Length: 110
Length: 235
Image (cartoon, rainbow over all chains, first blue to last red; front, side):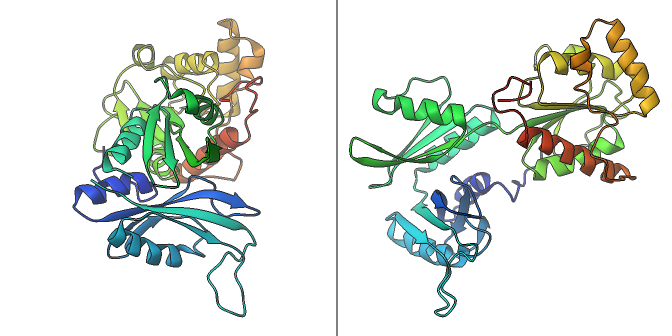
C-alpha cells in the first residue's frame, strides 16, 4: 500500500495531519437546499495555516469556510455556517448555482 | 470531534465496515457506531435508517439537533489479470474512490513493482475467492482473456450478483465464452449480464484508455443500478 493518503480522502488526510502534530478542523456539509454542489456529509479539512483538502462546495465558499475554520482551531468552539445565493452587487461569498448549504465546522481534539 | 473518533471512522472504512457518526450540533459531542453493534435505544431507528439508505442528514431527537453522517464501505473492483490495463485501472480506481484487488496466478505478471497502491494476490481466483467472497458492492473485471483464469471468477461474480461483471475479449472470444458458460449450466439471463466487449464504447485504443472505458462503465453500473436490488447488483 502507498503511504501517502489519497488527496481526495479528507478524513484520511485529517488523521495524517493530526499524527503530524498539525492543528486540524473538519468542515462537513450538514444540510442542503436546491442545487447544492456537494452532497450532505461532504468534508473539507483545514489546518492552522489554512492548508486544506476536500470540498464543501464547488469552490465557491471554501475561502470563507477556511477563514472561519482557522478561528475555530483557535477557540475550539464549533460553529454552523450558512451560505446562500451569491449577492453579485455586494461581492458577498455565496453559491452561484442558486442553492443553499449549512456547514458544520469543528476542531479535531486530542 | 475527538481524534479517536476520526481514527475509528478511518479504521472502519479500511476494514470495509459501515460506520455512523452522530454529532450533537448544540455542543459538538460526537460518537461513532459500527454496523452490527448495539445502538442507544433512542437513536436506534436513526442509525439503522442511515445504514440502510447510506444517506446523511440532520434529525431532531428529544429536543436535540443531531447530525447523522454515514460512511459506507467503498465499492470494490476485483480485476482478474495483472495486465497492462489493470495497472492503469488500479491508478484510476483509487482516485475515483474504489477499493481495488488484483488477482493473477501468473507470478511474472503479479509483481509488487507493477502494482504499488492496490492489493495484489498472486494466486488462482478459485483459491482466493472462497475466503474473500465477491458481493453486491463489488465489480469484477476479467482481463486475462484466458478461460482457465477468467471463467471461474466470472461465474462466481454472477452468482454473487456483483453490480458489474465485465470481460475482456473480442466478440468471437466472448461468443466462445458464452458457449462454455452455457454448457457449464450458467443461466442465460446471468450470461447476458456480462459486459463484453468490456468498457464503454468510446473508441479506446491504448491500455490506459481501455481502463478509462472500463471504469466509466463500472461507475455507470454503480450509479444507475436498480435501487430495489430486484434486477441484481448492489442495493
